[in-house]
Length: 298
Image (tube, rainbow, N blue to C red; front, side, top):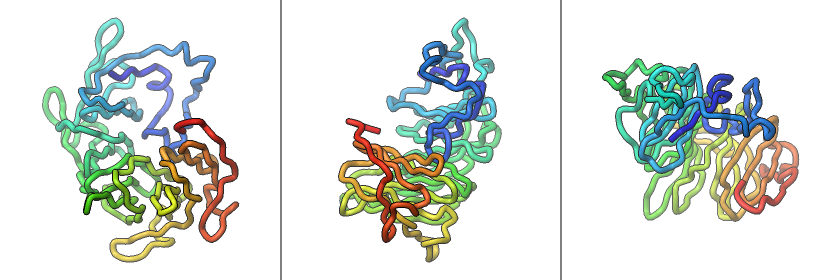
C-alpha cells in the first residue's frame, strides 16, 4: 500500500528515485519537509501497489504519481480521479499490461516513464494514451530494449538514460554501465568488472559526467565517465573507460550521489570526493576530502 501526502503530491515534481539524476534527494518543493513539520503530514490518499513484496518506488510529474509494484501504476496526484471514500482510496488511471516480479524505477523523462524488469529497459507513454486501451486501462511499452540478464535502477540525465546491466555466464555476472539515448537506443557501454551477483546501486549523472560502481581486485570504487560518450571512448559500438575513479573500499558500496560539485559514496562510511575529479587526485585515482564512520549503511 502506498500513501501519498499532500505536500509531496501537490507542490513539486520528483521525477525519479533520489529526486534527480544525481540521486541527491534534494527537494525542490516550495514547502520544505523538516523535522519540525514532518509529524503534521497526513495522507492525501492511499493506493495498492500490488502483490510484489519489495518496497515500491515512485515519481511525481504532471499531476500524476507513478508507482512501481507488481505493475507500473499511474495515479492522480490530487487524489480525485479514480478515488473515493472519506479517507480516499484510489484506483490507477492506468497500469502496465503485464505483471513483473521486480520492477525498478520509475523515471519520467520526455513524456515517457522508464522502468527496468529483469533484463529489459521499458518505457511507457506517461499520458496513458499511446499503446493503451481497455477498461480498466492497461498500457504496453512504447520502448522495450534487452540489456542483459539483469538490469539495475535507471537514471535519466541530460544526455539520456543510464543503468547498470549484468550478464550471467560461467557462474558469475559481468557488469557494465549502459548509456541509452532518450529513445532507448544504446549509445555507449563501459565495463564495471565482474562479480557473483547483479549490481543494483543506481548510477548518478551530473554536469556531463556519469558515476557508477565498479568492481576491482582491491574492492569497489566509483568510476566517472563522459556522459557524451566521447572522452575515453572508442569503437563501434562505443566502449568507454573511466575518466577517473575513487579509491577502493573492501566492503560493498550501497549508494552514490552528486550534489553541488561533490560526489558522495556510501558504504560503512560516507566518503566525499571532488565530483570534477581534480582535487586530491593522482594518476586518475581520487582520495576523499573527508570520510566519517556511520556505524552502518549510508
